[in-house]
Length: 208
Ligand SMILES: Cc1cc2nc3c(=O)[nH]c(=O)nc-3n(C[C@H](O)[C@H](O)[C@H](O)COP(=O)(O)O)c2cc1C
Image (cartoon, rainbow, N blue to C red; front, side, top):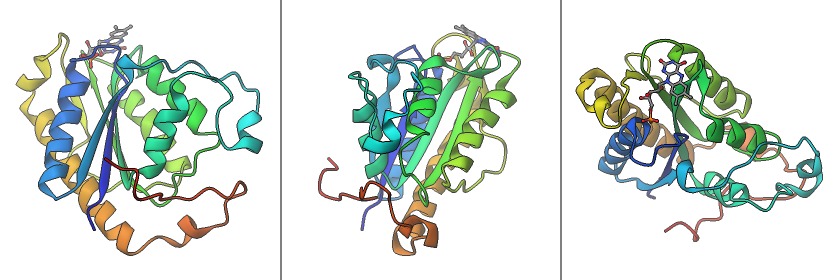
């Protein structure tokens, strides 16, 4: 069975450095026979969490922006790769909003996941930690990479000169796809825990 790998760019720049890294990751995932999808949050409306707690009972967000669409794509994916620019030593707002809002209701446990960050100079480690904390608390599994998945660049496209970052992005794509393939065949026990709202982890036939 072909795995489904979703790349999400949290940058407000549509063709920025984060997008270039995600594209490199997804290309590698595709080389592992995965089906890939790219969601660019710069093209979507993802507002902040209102802390209304409605999602705890309904299993979706009460707001009418694009969040529930992205959440559904995340739920359908076997592996998720998050990318963000470093903005004041944390992730960019759209990804922060996505994490805040999906983090409170979406069941992602047992999926493969990784993330990377691009910044100009300082704060990338803190931003990466923010993504990795999210992956960890959502009970997803990070395959690791031979170096931390961070890159250094300022203007759109500059990241291509950071060949180490581009190589890490490729490796992240390969490893997330490989791990997802293993996990789909051998689901971790915690991915079978009962869902309070009865939702399924995999729907299967909606993936394009
Ligand atoms: C609001 C804002 C805050 C930023 N803060 C940082 C920062 O704290 N550290 C850093 O190294 N770069 C910072 N940058 C630079 C971006 O991380 C850098 O330009 C990156 O390449 C942008 O990636 P993108 O093209 O995917 O948006 C900031 C940029 C913006 C717009």
